[in-house]
Length: 107
Image (tube, rainbow, N blue to C red; front, side):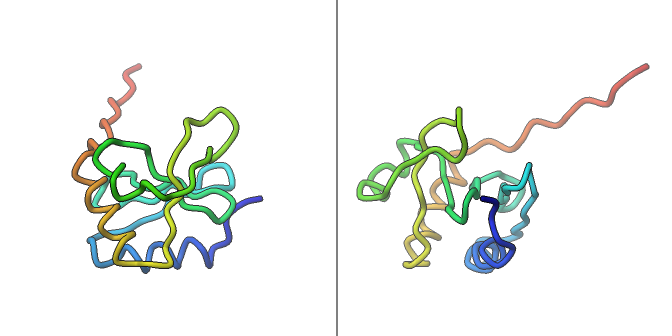
């Protein structure tokens, strides 16, 4: 089941205090960017974030799961406490690299 646009809008609105937020549709699901970095994979109306050591203490009680078959296990970020979610994403953002720029194809 794909994500609803209402769910994506809710997440984007919740993350707005962190800066520029955008969502990109990918095969029925979405990836959500904050200030140019991919921070959330949204599938089946769940927000998945990478399992990194920097957020492990904050996500100790969080559920885990895979966004899609073959994906690495991720934390499921609960947005019921928006301040907690913002702290997790801000910490994660600091640890994640910017996406690599693609080189132009030469013919």
